[in-house]
Amino acid sequence: MQRLKQKLDSGTTVLSGWCGITDPRYLETIAEYDFDAILLDMQHGFFDETTVQQGIATLVARGKAPLVRIPLGRWDTAARVMDFGALAVVAPMINSAAHASAFVSATRFVPVGNRSFGPRHAASLYGIDSEQYLTGFDQCSLALAMIETREAYQNLDEIIGVAGIDGVLIGPGDLSISFRQNPVPDAYGIDTIDVVKDIVSRCKLAGKKTAAFSINPQAANMLHGLGVDIISVGLDVTYIANGVKSHLAQLDFR
Ligand code: 3PY
Ligand code: MG
Image (cartoon, rainbow, N blue to C red; front, side):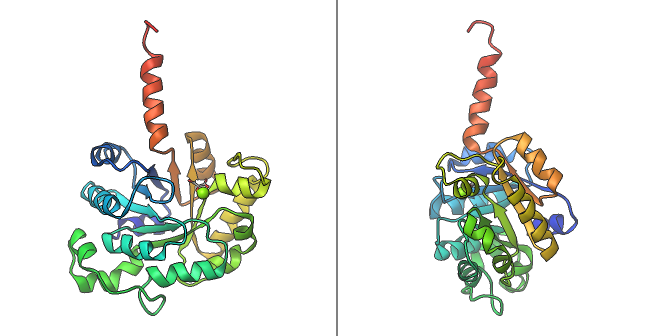
């Protein structure tokens, strides 16, 4: 359970996969590769409460830190996925300190938040007793606020100033949509790259963790150059598409 936080605290980059496809066999396959963590996506992916609980268990059994992105504003789900054993909960579209406080209230035990007692499933998943879980979990898990709108950027200092928010996860697609006022994203493009750099450096100054989504290895390398702590690269549909493309491209009869 401590591994994710220890890795981050030692300054080692955490590499994450990103999955919305719920099939356990598929997750097992992704988990065979060199990811430290895998994010299960309940916002835009297909995970629901049943499949996310199974997905978390699949990942823990394979030594991968389970991260979960909850649907918009679903603080009840945030608390439940922590009960299921998620080591980071990612909340989309956190635009204000009020959103951040509601998120913390659901996911942190007293005195920082008001998370309800229900530790048995996660404790047994990690092979510890309930008391160890209750005293240790807040130190091992992360509440990550997605910064992905102009409003969130304007309120960044207030959001990361909320006690119990461990850091941010930058959503470059929505961030660019919000800045450009254009539904076609331009992730890490000219309109937002300086904003991204500023978010990362202000979080670092504040002692908060940084995470960011990238669609391809080039963007992931760029994020690594910025010193982002948790970098996700690609997502399930691109893993599949690239595998299919590479197979077809190597045929000499098509
Ligand atoms: C975004 O880029 O907006 C995200 O939420 C990443 O999936
Ligand atoms: Mg987004």
